[in-house]
Image (cartoon, rainbow, N blue to C red):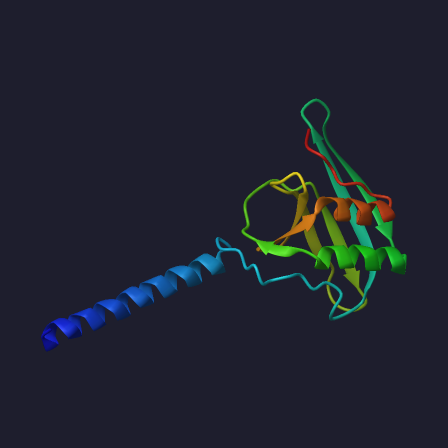
Length: 155
């Protein structure tokens, strides 16, 4: 192979590498690619002192109905936090949310997490900004039930 051809191959490989790196960076930045290694970590910086759960039941006939539940019980808070922290990173989508979990830490701003019905029968998702996590549906329902709330369903 001539030096000229070798040089062109090297330049082309560098250019392709840069383009692929930029594409992957942009995809991660806007949430198109899931971060499977990413897990939530609520309550690590400052302990959560209260949780407000808002669930929204949407039906075509009656419209939307919100239900609010607040708890300051440390055992219930610990169960909910453990359940939220058990999530695994998944790709974000633009599905409609069905409620919120608002965590009030001892110090710092309130953390608002969207509840999103999962794409599978056995999962329920949460969305925190651009991050989305999948959680076992039964575990999430059980944790919220301890606070007196229930997971909304779309039927």
